[in-house]
Length: 136
Image 1 (cartoon, helix red, strand yellow):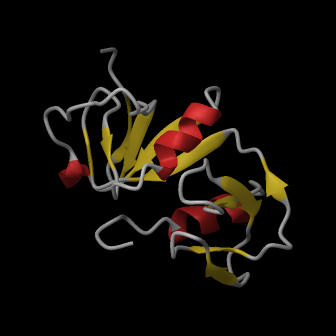
Image 2 (cartoon, helix red, strand yellow; image 1 turned 60 degrees about the horizontal axis):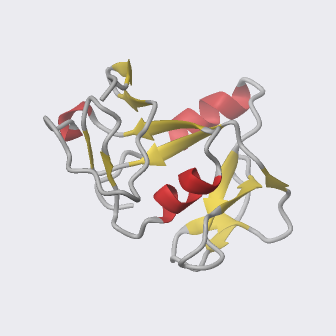
């Protein structure tokens, strides 16, 4: 969405390598997201947040890793998103999931302010590679 990096090429590569892929789905604006299986080329429909999402018949899954879009990030796992809180609510409900930001290296900032409800990322994947988050 907007200036977020397009994850489709990465999803295509993962799917081609045999990795089971899924997409987030917002069912209720104030609840954690669910995840439905999705393969490139399958149809999508708008979810409750107006984002493209797999159809309701798709299998609901519990991912091991969540690739997270962002508008800005810092070296300490701080992430600035679109402001809806969807990913933070989902991360809070799934504390064991690996949280990887996905964006452009130019979106890195020195330090983002974190509020009590913000959940830090484990690292960030950009067009130049992966960087693990530093300890706070």
